[in-house]
Length: 203
Image: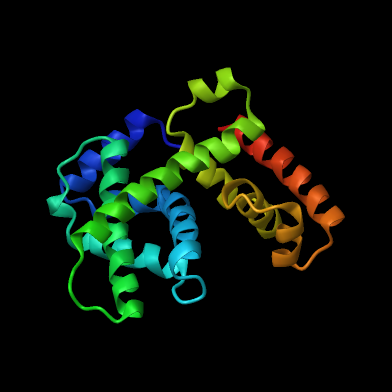
């Protein structure tokens, strides 16, 4: 995410004032972040049944429709609001595939918490691998920055880092998922980390 916090807050203010262009730009800033969270949650609950991109798009459509309900002014408040909408949509998908119709508030609250943990896991799983502890402590909105950097990587680099660092698979399991040898996966992972570190130093 290239915008500073101050610039993002200005975009939020413009969006709340009815500027649809600012709203669209805001959503794009958080697309990679929400996609990654959706990917991690769908792997646990609905692997192969619902696409992460579809879930993110549904979240943005609802956020656009209901934007007047957003009362925050900061990026953190906006991210939290978007995560809540996505948790509700994910809960709807889980109910659909489980064949239940009644809304389950406990499920939605659990998913909100799970998405928050996934966001924290994104920082823990990748920040330590590419920065020193002091650098990590100085970063702002680490999870969003990391997701944006991951989104800019070549697909194979992105996939190996997600599988190894975020899903915490062993190298043999990563190799099986990517249909590669373990040796090639280890080399790919090392190159991916180096590329990610380079992207983060540019931001």
